[in-house]
Length: 308
Image 1 (spheres, one colour):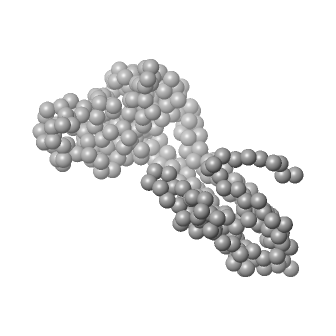
Image 2 (cartoon, rainbow, N blue to C red):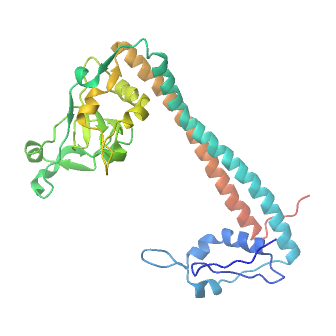
């Protein structure tokens, strides 16, 4: 049974006459959402004002037909909602597949692999930022990365570039292609990407140069496997940060380079399979959303025929 209720001025309320089913009206508004949004205006918040809503005309069939349409839509959309929830859960599982495999790889070999502090097996340095007001330091040809750009396994072209003058007159350092960049500050702590070109980076990032002892993609995975524990070591009041010293102290496994490359190859295969599954589920969710929109369109264009 519907209960009496009150709303704020942010709502428009319809009290349906006996010849109009409120569930039918609700589905109609969902189906006609794009048309309703055409009446919205506002610089900051898009608002549909009451006069425009009052002027919105609807056409409706007899009450019995409204109730039939509502019954069909209730059943069909409930089934679609269940299918979409299942697909979204499968998508989450697919994305978790890589993390689970990553943990198992390093857990299984934890006792066998010797570990070393990162700072003892690779050169680790923080970056720097050329003076922003000094225009001649910026707009050059040298890539310069911030931690917000460390979103994929490998970097792409940087959002900003610095000049040779900016590099010379700042703490920024040019690191070679293949270096691992590790975020140190706040929510970007332990975000990581490998340089796909020679580049520089700001002081919120630690750069780890490649060498013959360690594969930087293997290093990225090794740090990712213990990331939750490492994040607990962040310090600070307003921001929880990792220091350069903490980065250098990270104990990383050091199997032979050939074994490191084999682990990287294995994890790449799992990544590809995970992405394939995720793409399939994303497509399925999109198809279910399109089917829902199609059903609503059919319902209010007279195309939702009687069963049997």
